Length: 193
Image (cartoon, rainbow, N blue to C red):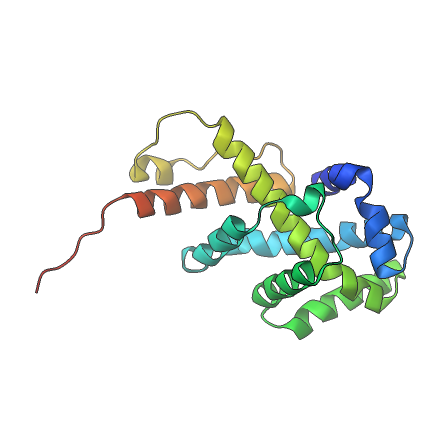
């Protein structure tokens, strides 16, 4: 899975060791836990990206996320936990639903439930960090002139290579971001009364 491959490189290759220490489990168990938790989080973010009314919230999350958790941030910080819990609550509809999913994944993996619950907010933040980093890279490499909104909606974005969940998500998010940017850039018409 590409998400895990990218996380293996995070924080100089030390991310899973740090996560294991945070949760009181081995680095290999921390990796297995994230392998179980990241795809459902990414799928929920993908669903969010396809719903225009809710996409604005995802766009705000991406703008707030600076990808520093991938490089050097403390995965055990209160800020990471609070932000991750807020993301999970938003994606799952409640904190209880998110915790239930973490507990079910923990039982399937035979990893302690509280350890999974400590890692789940970090997993949410890591998925957002990866997405934010990927979108930034895509924006930097895209040097083509801006297309009109009608051209953009007719052809889906071809970003995020591959047929993985992550690639599909990036493609959907890229198209939605482009639509949102175009909507923000186009002048709004006001009715005069």
